[in-house]
Image 1 (tube, rainbow, N blue to C red):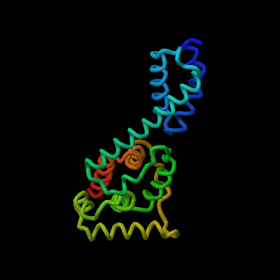
Image 2: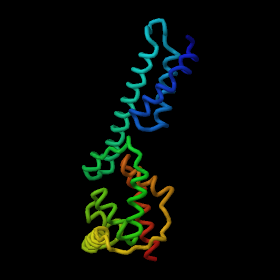
Image 3: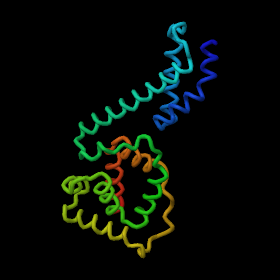
Image 4: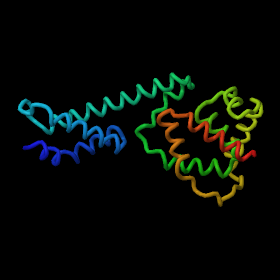
Length: 201
């Protein structure tokens, strides 16, 4: 069987295996492609079972990809000195866009922009009040009051909010998802800060 025939025969199966392991179609495609490129350059006379060889190769490449991602995330978090708990968050294998969308709908409807921004950074990412004070130029006590007020509004099921606010789509959800799954907080902080400032002005 030629290399091209092998690729045509096993690519769908290997693609499915890779997606299941890494949880990303795009990453899975790259991993399978790299696996086939290496397969085409080796001496196939030493391979007794091409299917088993390719499955093992793809599996190993997926595990290497995951370990590499975790290492890069750890290095990034250490470089910007984020709270330790962020390092424990590993949502890279989950598609959380729908859950984030639903949660943010509630936050946008029930909370004012500044309340929402401070609440997200405090409750979701464990920012200290000293950090929030510096980011939003608000006193720590004020930040605490805003978080407390936000919790009260969110826990009050009788609280009436504007149902006309449009569904949240696009770049902000991507920014929030990247903050959860990859620890990319700089863009999220800038977005929340900018949004709060615009509203106050």
